[in-house]
Length: 373
Image (cartoon, rainbow, N blue to C red):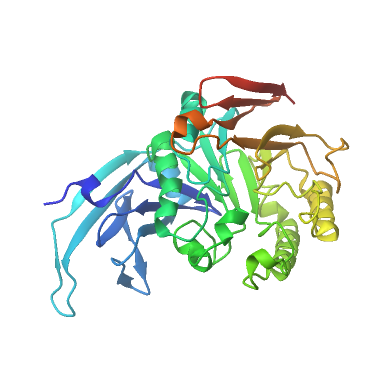
């Protein structure tokens, strides 16, 4: 009989999406999976058929239920022979997890992006703030590309080591995630809402919007070989932002919201050098909508492989930034054979009624910078 980690590659990751949690687990072998919350079992199913031929299991559960009971149970049954009649499975294997929802007005967020399949160094950086972290943000380019399903394991290894299935996580897509044969099915391996990689979420006193800039150069750029259509994709997000504003009372103006967060892999308020200087008019509109209506507390980004804070009206504000922008990842790939020697910096963000504390720290235990906003 298989044990839990004979089936699961990692602990589960509990992603906040909209008003639900999507609990995702990468697996080593064909299996069925369900999640029990408050006595109710939620199976991983497609049109009523339980899924077994998958690389990751994904189950949605009501956020309110899990926040209330603060615990869930995973149930696995590995496949012996899924024949058309009387399929055979091994006995059920279960594992219980405690869960810590966001409740306080003092919140700790750890931000990681641009790991490009690096695992040990980002985990080491995140562990420095493990006791203060209430929420993990994985903000794009966690895999190096989508040419192999094994690359996606990096997402879950990092989250597993830092959260142990006990705290929530937010995920956003990066531009390198859009390259490779599996890019078109990226949402099968990661959280999304109604087939979208952009969405809003609510965790306690924190409300957020995840935006997806897609690729970082024009759709016609030769590198993409005619495989992308992100201009129209970004236009759809403009309408999405407008819809969020129309529903403000149920979104960022809802009772109990103290902080409003924008999460985007690409810091779209900043105009980069050619050929990365795309969509200026569109990104200016995003900034204007966010600044005028949503009035975010903070924006978290990566992409630039840097640890910086961009303030509204400074030299990095090209399109009217709606709030301070934290660029929170720095990857140096001097020695690919020895991950810990490469060096990685992430960002801890502490939100409180008094201020915002930002600390950039590295995988060797050093602090690269600290700011109070």
